[in-house]
Structures are given as C-alpha cells and as structure tokens.
Length: 292
Image 1 (cartoon, rainbow, N blue to C red):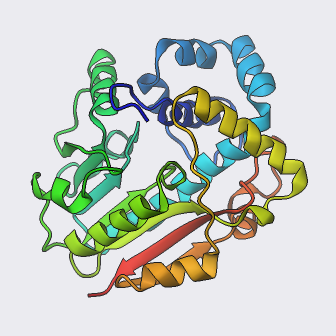
Image 2: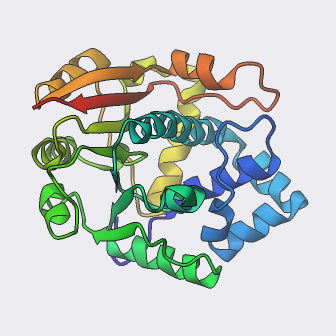
C-alpha cells in the first residue's frame, strides 16, 4: 500500500458497516458512526435508497460474504473486548485501525479506558478530518500512533506513546493480515508478546487454506483480489492451516482461547437471515491470552 494514500479497503469496510446498520434487519453489528467517516461518494450511495440498491445490491453483491466477515469479526471482537473491560482491562490497542469507531460508540467508557489506534499516517489524517468535519471531534481517550507494520516494529511504536506495558491490554487486529507478508504477521505477533502486559488479550482474523473455499465461492475471492489490486492494496496469498498456525502463535507465549471457524460463525451470527449474508469460507477469528 502507498503510504501517501489512505486505505481504500478500510473505507470500503466502513461503508459495509454503514450499509448494514442503515438497511439490514436483524443487525449483526451496529455502527451508526461509520457513514459519517466515509467519503462523499460512499455517503451519497448510502443515503440514497435507489443508489444503495444499485451499488450494494447489484455491483457489490458478489462481495456479500466479505460484508458478512466485516460484521462478524467486529461482533466477535467487541463481545470479547467488553468482557475484558468488565474484568478490568483499561488499555485497548487497535492495530491497523482504519475507520474504527469504538470510542465514538462507547462514550460512557471515556474515563475508564484509553484507546491507541495504530495505522499509517495518511489513513489517520483522513479519519481526523472526517471526525472534525462531521462535528464528532477527537475523543479525549484516543491516541493516534503512526506506523507501517511492514517496516516498523509495533512495540517500538507503542513505546513512543503513553501506552503502559505493565498493564494488561486488549489488542485487536482486523482485516489486516491478508495484506501483510507472513514475516510481517509474525513480527507483529512477536511485538505484541514483547510489549503487552501479562494477561493481555489479542483478537485477529486470518485466512485458512484455499482448499477450504468451495469452488462456487472462488470467483468471489478472485473479484475481491481484483478490487484490492485496483485500490493499490493487493491481497497477499498467505494460507494458514488453523491447527498449525495457532500452535505457532501459542509458541510465542499466547494461550489459545478460541479459533472460530466459518461454520461456527454461521451458527453464531447468520442463521435464518433473508439477505443471504454469510461468512467467508476459510476465514477464522482467533482469540489469544498472553501468559508470560
């Protein structure tokens, strides 16, 4: 990804969250602020029902499983995050934050938790402009940390902030690993293990082996690759065998809490829907706790 440009795929994910809360029923994940953060073309498509039907119902319909993944991973993460906060976690680190809206959606936690968003500068500047333009302001408990995780060490970036490595934290890292090399993924995991306090938790999503994807869905994956390449953010063909991969992560000092498969995602979030939303085949949600 070009560091001078904001993430178009992160904006696309925000548009999918906005579309869902505006037009879907029942709601898997409610993000009423996402529509305020996307650019004007997306806002126009979201606000006009006819345009929305054309853009999301026709042109983007093959990407429906991607929208399902965006919503399900957000729901999965937030459920575990709120449990961690109830148990006393006071620091949240959002890796590759994009247009995350946790602080906006939970103003009641402003004095209870500190949020650190890590992303490259262009995306962060775009988000700040959208927050200010829409009168939302920069939440007082949010600190932006600029970093390129393909080139920079996450632990080093956090040390330049007010982050306290002695306190347990909750890290989440959504929709990012498919754009990183295997080396960068493990470097980031090692950095989390290095900088996080004992008992910290980590949630992220990752792609399983390609042979898990049914043939009828592989055309959708090819279409997604086409879109991300056009946006200058090509997907990197990392394929992880779930058992082997989670064991490798555990070898860094993490204890596996959950590794939610697509079938389990379907059972939790997608049953009895009329809109055909469904999870992405081969995509997993992993939840770890650091035990030093």
